[in-house]
Image (cartoon, rainbow, N blue to C red; front, side, top):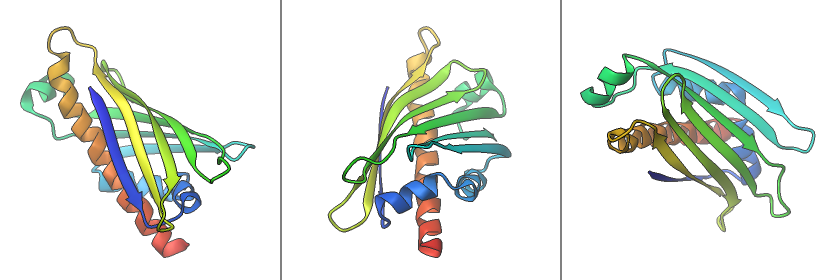
Length: 166
């Protein structure tokens, strides 16, 4: 199933990127998403890019037919590999989400670009897959909803951090 999420930020691309690679921002997004536990690992690259890995254990709100199969909680691993800034300041990332121990994942791309009003826009696109024969496609929309909800929380927390710190 195709996923397409667009988030708009009042902040510049660079301010938004800094919020994406700030541990406290990612941890607060985990808290606000209802995660029971989490770990955040951020490694900045010499070229100005970065690798972000967020593991969060959650009790997601899923329909009963999915919850019965995956149990009461799941660990979601999110890995972003951010590029150095392009000439116009924009950045791209590969984005991979997996539900650890389950046959569900999302492989995609994020593009963080400037907007004419001085802010920025992030577009995340990807393919959500649930590799369960016959019924996997029924699960994909529900998994996509959970992924999108998490991305909306990350946007809100990032914008709040930028307003308070930049």
